[in-house]
Image (tube, rainbow, N blue to C red; front, side, top):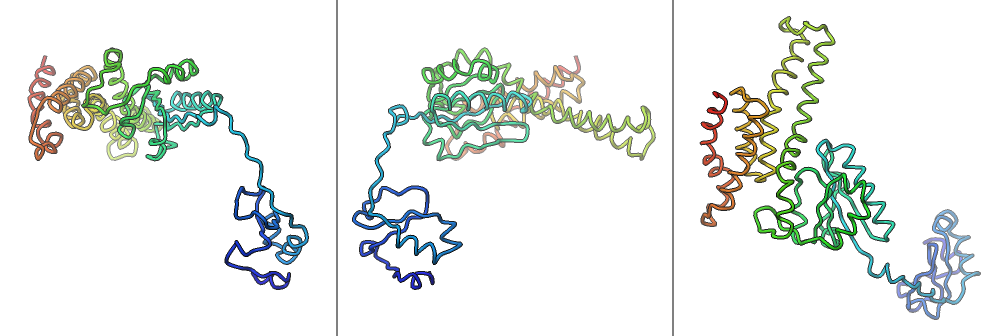
Length: 345
């Protein structure tokens, strides 16, 4: 600092030998190294703008250091609860974010540290880090669809819906504290609340499929609407933009609706091993003419059969990795014949 010599001050490396200490900030720290020294508390902006004047003021106005009084920490703050939460709804728009805001507001009223991860239509927002998971006392999942919760394995978890989290936030947080159970990922026994979750399981799996199908519906419908903008029958003229939009919307996007619905119903039930069989079953439902009903049946059938094979079939450790990519898809090829038979009827 060139200004120091001009102020007749010498900078030294060892703080124990210093006679004057300059602290930049708004408050003095509780530091035993400052005991017995003259201390000047100053503004960093002034130090940068006018270093020579600042050092002169420090030299003239420094006072013997007095450690700041310790601030008493309220008992509630000492035991501050740390919670993390995840919200998700079928559309990933309104309820996802409204429930997140309700949880944050109620938790802060109670003096809790809180962070809510939203699994919306654009993906995960305000993502919870592994460090925050490790420090959390409680995990709250307010979701109407199945979401990936693997990173919360072993943490106390309470599951509810976005509707209850939004309308009865205080009651749900009270129940979360008393009813949370350690979470174990799918495929491991989870005795607590198993019966309670079973009744809502099918509905949740169906909503998961619907939530992934909706973008196909929206994109396809938009393309068809744009095609109609050129005229109600403009798409009948080949090699025109209207015909291309109708083909993209009605011929491609809409054709993927049922396979995506079936695939993600199966994914919700059996995780990744169920995705491929579900997609194949949904495509067979479309080609066979059984439509949405056939796709829903194919999704549930593929999901539960894939889950059964994944959990019941015991293989040597060296072959476990083949289950989701070879054994389960091959084992479910018999569903094709069943799906075709349903379509024929």
